[in-house]
Amino acid sequence: MDFLISFVLALVALLILLQLTVLLLWVERKGSALIQDRVGANRANLFGGLLPFNLGIVNTLMADPLKLFHKEDIIPKDADAFLHWLAPFIAVLPLFVTFAVVPFGDVLVLGERVINLQAADVNVGLLFVLGMVSLGVYGVVIGGWASNSRYAFLGGVRGSAQMVSYEIGMGLALVAVVLTYGSLDLQEIARAQGQLMWGVIPAWGVFYQPLALVLFFIAGIAESKRPPFDLPEAESELVAGFYTEYSGSKQSMFMMSDFIEVAIVAALVTTLFFGGWQVPYLYRDGFHLPGGFFFGVPSLVVTILQVGAFLTKLFIFCWLQILVRWTYPRMRYDQLMNLGWKRLLPIGLANVVVTAVLVLALEGFTVP
Image 1 (tube, rainbow, N blue to C red):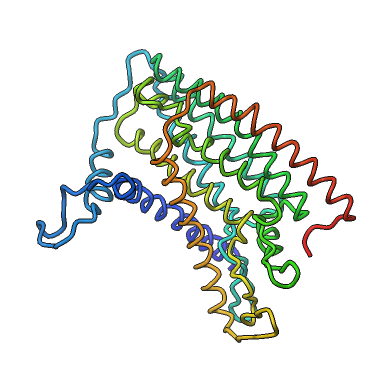
Image 2: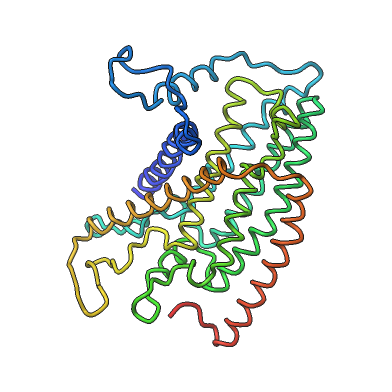
């Protein structure tokens, strides 16, 4: 029974990630059109154009995937065929595993059984996240090197330097969160944010660590190689960067990894800084509002509200990353490196030191 429950939870987490990836593909095209005041994908339509509106769903979710997966898989001459095939899988698989430790709810009570709404209950979840995310750089490097192309190779070198640089800033932001909540378990961090500061304000990470939020969000966008940090695949300089020599399904896997990384960054921002699945003033028995007001809510409804809150926050931060992607121009490579090493690194170190001093001064104080 435990194996079946674990399998179902893993399947739910995988479906959330896959469906969100598909949705982000559509938002990337039609959302960018909305941001830039243009029409966007609108050529194909359902029922032969009989519908009075065209949301680009056929173009984005049917025509484009079919086109990509049916393209010829070309391997350049003198390229390493095995590594050329392996690189997209190395880029994608660690990202799927990473999402397994993200809690999408508190617990689901079924009779006498209490189910933790997390595909993989890992008590060192943040270390696991850092380890899995860092493996993605191998897909970029191997893909660039195995292609036997100078453009792909330069993209791989850029990608490795960028991802290693910004992992340090991301790690420092996470250290500050760990010092604040005293745990590496993502579920425990989310539960700790259900408390209230002074009985009124939710104890979310954004109120304790606003600077860490900024550092983590910038480093997360850079880790996902999205504009304005898309130097490893800069079209105007490197054609398509590290996946220049990829086509068909393997190219689509690299493209899919970008959207999965967007979803993971949004999930971690939600869990660490915005309460995760927490709904302010909502507990297992109902809403406890300031001033002594109480509204009873059934346990199952509480669980549904929590999962809905997590998904809503998740989509908001995904949309924010897409908004950044279509708003800011690409940085120069020297600006990219300067931001990571000369700005984020010292600010992150200072934030960790200040946080540690405050925790020691308050005798291990974490949350009220």
